[in-house]
Length: 400
Image 1 (tube, rainbow, N blue to C red):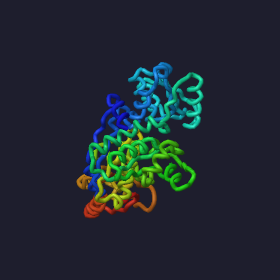
Image 2 (image 1 turned 180 degrees about the vertical axis):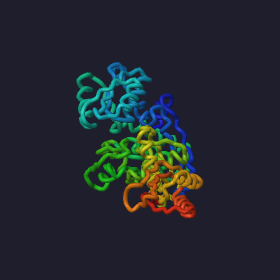
Image 3 (image 1 turned 90 degrees about the vertical axis):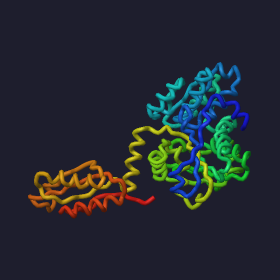
Image 4 (image 1 turned 90 degrees about the horizontal axis):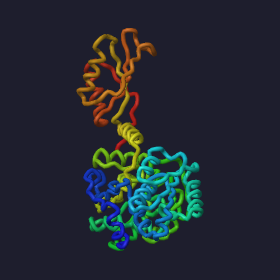
């Protein structure tokens, strides 16, 4: 592992390990985050790609490489290939979002779109590699890829030697296998725990003697892998103590918490470790916990959706009905009361023509954003004091 670290030192970022004050407060654990989001392509995949490409022969460099990926591995191979002057072809499924295709091309790769999913794209890449004498660079099931990814663990325990446990997101297993090898070599007593999304619990099921299982779409698409690689699996069986499953809702909350409180952007897979910490506080309370933030390549449209969903879940966006007399100035007065309580009105609908509303009265259906669920009670009390009736239409508040 140290040889891999020396080899790629000039090709990747030695990312920082930072304390996470808000996560410490929320969990009761001492928490450090390894910011792989700071890599040039936004994920830890730079490490494995660099280590693999640097070990190509001159003939292999000349002919070029090919990889199959719809995400971070694609960008990492493209970027490292361009840096090293190696022709790079990336095979991506046809439904791959254009932004991912564009970023991969921007890093210097030739992109081929084929197949409906990763399986078909992988079959095409394997066939083309044989036909054109290209070197196939797999995303995780390769010893050199595993060693490259493991350098993140080597850095983590060197920077924070007091760590008791590492939480590592798991897709194909390359990262957790490498991190486990590196961390256990430096600190044999450290505990390594994998984190998977509930929709793709492949590793957890395999370790329990069950066949792999995969489900619906998930926000953690970076770890939505149907089966773990054979090389990582052998390492995991020996060195990883447990695998925790987390829901998409928990991951969304983790993304929101990291952004709002730690000022860090993580994609779904990248935030999985934080989701596990927050969902299992009792297990980690009082321990020194390290979490690898594996990537930060989150689409801005999806991020906006996550922010709104979490605010609804926390009761910071609510809908209520306010009964008023239908005369000039009343709407402005209601808005004034709500504003004085620190809430922001997002939408207002007048109800004049329906139900049992008097012809001289009206009802306002108001959607507003509050600072906390407790603000809602204060808003309703102030409106009632001002002579307006109120009723709650919708809120999805939940405690955290």
